Length: 449
Image: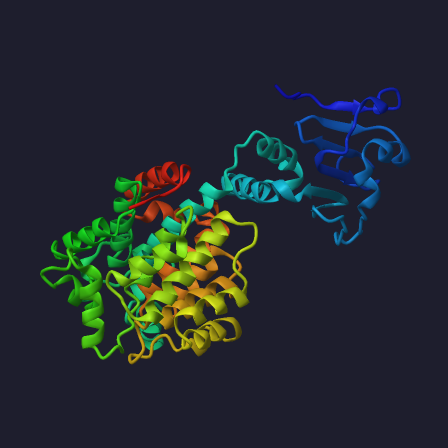
């Protein structure tokens, strides 16, 4: 059991400790809030030390103190592998990068519980909780993907198929909550806080994966068919055509390809992209699974490339230290269709208005949805900002928001999503159940079928 009492590091005992392996270092300038000039150190074992020796004495047992540079404006410098955090009022904190993501998650959770609390008062508790493993960043992001998808879908329904003028008329203050929904002939089929076909089909994939402990394409196709036969609300035209064919379950790829060819290879709807977020949280073989599951209903290479990009981006955000770069995303798109690159570039360089989301000729196009999702990922600094911006842009907003917010959920985590959206979902218990089972599944890997 680690020590829960502070250790005074003084002149008589400082040589007894080797503090080269530490996780956090706090330094208060003379006259700062708290103990003037005090230093607090947290070791990787969870011991923490109050310092009562000179800098030279301290640096002999804790060399890192020589490499940090304080700035009165909070623009501190730290060596490679350390993250500076200015606590205000002359207090400086340096965190080892190995726990930084956990620290951020702990900070978000603490602030969510008490918005008025100061980081100065809680940073030590957060670091010690990180050492105790209380913050699981991967699970927080995984949960953020699934709830992000459903929340974006449900709130996006409020403005689905609307242009800017219609949104301004019906929602003069913008759409903020599920209860804002205007129940016209289209929307009256849903209650406030219900998701649409986008999340329904995502759950078809998730339930099959969990049941089979792996990706069984036949089972996913069967779930799609059963769902389509149950009079689903909001099913897309392209998806409906494919799933309506009698022998679809036996020959899903053949049917999907046939419908695509019958449409002169011009159809590239976003029905495959809207449900692909769940693929991104699988532990491996993301590109293969994303492509295969897309082709179950959407055979066009633009659809496949879109699904691969979003799934791989989500996977990198959830599991890897560095998410996909712009160049890597471009390279992925080029593997499937050269037309994808233009929409990635638009997302990086343009405004959301420049994406022309309410154009009736291209509404529902997979590359439009890909573009707005990437735009939100690159340009929005919080989950809430991305959600509100995409929803209030209109067009195919339930799908656009479902995809964008799944990515933002992976980027910022479940802990970043306001409670009003989480608690406002009518069937959040279904999501919690899926998440619990997916966490158990992803922890043991994936079995091919």
